[in-house]
Length: 260
Image (cartoon, rainbow, N blue to C red; front, side):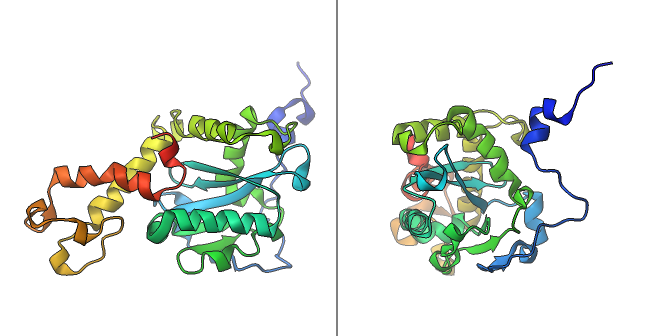
């Protein structure tokens, strides 16, 4: 019989064992709301708009450039942003840039973001307080952000830990992001993350579009850009709704327009 030890198994040594009933250590430095306060329904991934944020380091660690990642829990859509360092200032600038590019639709796309409790994310809640609820996981509890952890394994297939992030170009970052978002995934019934994301945005648009006479909010679409002839019985004509989908994504969702 073959004698196999944990050291012989790649996955066994790349994961810290999860202790039964252990929910990570208590946060000594509270950056905001704990993941314990996050609504339980978010865990089942049934609703879009819930994300995880994290960083990927290269061989030089925190003193080098790092990749800031945002992973959508439901669609597994990945946004990758190269930042100068793993520090509060660099991460804050990247988050502010994300919010600026997403504009008034930040609230519609990013309902919650779950972060680790690293000091580099200490201003995350302040930067997003007007649009997005932020939660922080426990120390040494990477499994509480399982989507990010699994996505990072995919990133490291093309950008190994042995490579300094400072040597990764913007083109390389986009190439990795596009590869991750355009290959079929079993969890998504073999759809791509990009297709799943587009389907979710379509649902948001279709469900939110109401007759402007009702005075209801319409995320992504502004009633003043529509005309009386675009409506039938209080609903937008199908061809008008479809017309808006791709321009909406191009204009408002960062990083998607690079390859759509």
